[in-house]
Image (cartoon, rainbow over all chains, first blue to last red; front, side, top):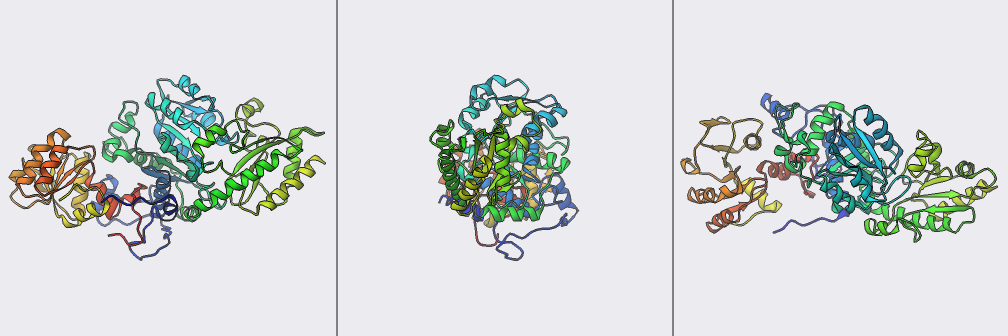
Length: 432
Length: 155
């Protein structure tokens, strides 16, 4: 008899955690320990040789963190996951497992500012070059591919331009070149989009955002699809004996979760950006209501976008769910259940220019929180040009989709009328 | 007596079996066959190496073929190319094994039919170690999506 397939909502609550073997505890125990005892010298040797599954040291694995890894892997329809201290750390682990000195990445130009800097500044220091291309034209990815390219990297929903990627088209280009497509799915969350179903090979999350959902805890994760052919000749690190493990060949020994094992046992083990067990517990608590929160984020964001579109003080509104949105067709295909909780808009210039009006709007907000985060249960507001993308110069900002007058809203779960009330009073004061 | 591919069927096989003949078991500790056999040995199974190239692997006497094994075998676990499996299936039937198990990446419908017709259970394209760890605990510690949802303690 075939196994019953559980639905997404059930996986939000159950995947990765069955009642504790030792105690029967129904909630996930927080294994707040650095280390785990060995049963014997032979057991220790087996663990260090990767011949048995088990825990040695919480930098490498921890049962509470593992529950989070399995849950997100299940929600994404992936084979395995590796959690990290932050989304940036998870992304670094994925890319440093794929690429080394002399290698190359092709990435969307419209990326979260921190990701852009990680690639353009930090990876460049490691000898890994990145070509940034126009994410709205999949062919630009193809043209940028070189013999030493190790992956294509893009976001489901670009931040902050909110352009939706044609994941299937870019995946086909990546696979023709024999490289994986790595997708940051943070702004969509797996409730809105599961990139692996469209051909992505590795999915990254800042779990800090919608997955955790409450603005309490930092965390990141990478999820491997289990479908990419690491034996295609382009990834000798997967198919030749590992120096770190006396000859283990990750692709051969661990099959469809070999990439995650390599990222864990080599990249994580030696670089160490581990997620704490307590953080994993808090993030999992958030994930248990992901399927209830996301519809509300989407409904309220659409209502706010429609409200702003009709406001006389607003020059433009960008939300993938709006009828006039340039990215609407892709949003309908890849985000059929809703276009997410984030939107941007520009204030009309007024007497002091658009950037000044934007700053005045933020100063006037009473309930919306001015801070650098998205995906909180509370409504958040920020002026990207002077904050998240401040490290980029004017031309780089425009290339990344950041306009001087742009305000970004992360629409929360408050009473919708209260969100609209705060927006209206702040718009009135911004224009005064 | 069926082709088994579901959690409850694989759990039954793993709980009912005690002796595993491993065809193509390597003596090199970093080879996948050695990994899998050592794991199962550590979890209480009697491993019977089958490989004409060795006298002994994992401290157990190694036999050239299945038919040379003088005692009961429950699972015949195959680390060989898919095309090589039908004669192994005939041997598995001949020695009265209960399960023909083909490892990850190995499938052979003819071999499966030979075994099924003789009343054996057949598992294809699955790793015995990964399935044990997936269903009876351990694989979850590696962040792997086990597909297990349950409100009962493991075991």
